[in-house]
Length: 308
Image (tube, rainbow, N blue to C red; front, side, top):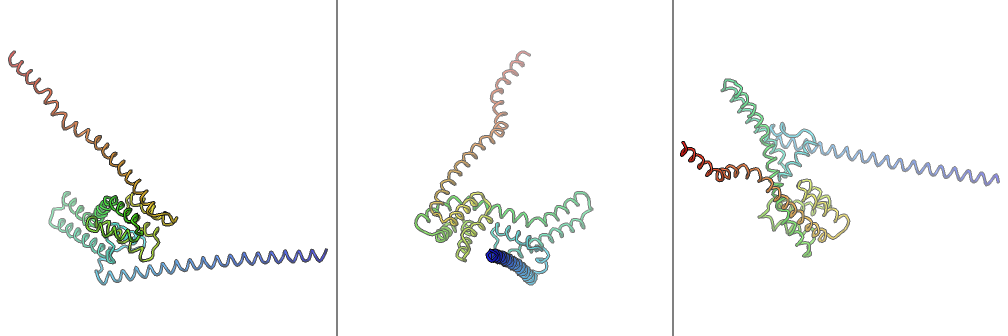
């Protein structure tokens, strides 16, 4: 009995020691992986910082100090500016520097107009207002231009989406793969819808570069902010992840999108009728009263003159 108890205690101690060793090994492995992840993040941040410094040096060498002065100073601001420029269709390597130069030139022009107004005027309230407006106008002109360009581009892409979606469904039902269908549709709409063709060309290039389909369409949904485009990108991404038939998924989405467009047009038509009520009332009521009451007023005046 004593020998058996001793063996049981030894086995228990051995099991506890083994469990402790396993727990220690797992914790050590997790800690090593966490340290590797932290080191990788630190290396990526250093590489991004070095790339940013190199880009700044290149910008200063090519575009002068004004590009460096107006260029975003943090990685977050730089990424946001690149995203906004991409939404406006400006994706070249020097888009940030050119936009920074445009902002700097606009500020200098606004400041020059302000200085000229203040130097040549008597500094009245109107002159000071004109100077302030000139300075603000010079500072915000590039922002307004980029916002206007982005809205026009987004509207053009949203307007071209129904026809593009029908072409894409037709190509996929004819047997083409997703990449071949996107490339074919991009070639077909290059002249009629250049904005849509540009976005589809970027998608095809990213797929050929090796990016996953869900990631490619997630980036497309980030560049094009319309709800229909975002829904289409979600459908394609989910179908690709789940292994579903892209042709069937796109056909069903095209049918539902067509129904939504019909309902949206009916809603817009109903709103037009309601919106025209007040203008028609204001414009037609005086003419209707004149036509209805005019003869009666004339007869009343004639009778009064005759009686007098």
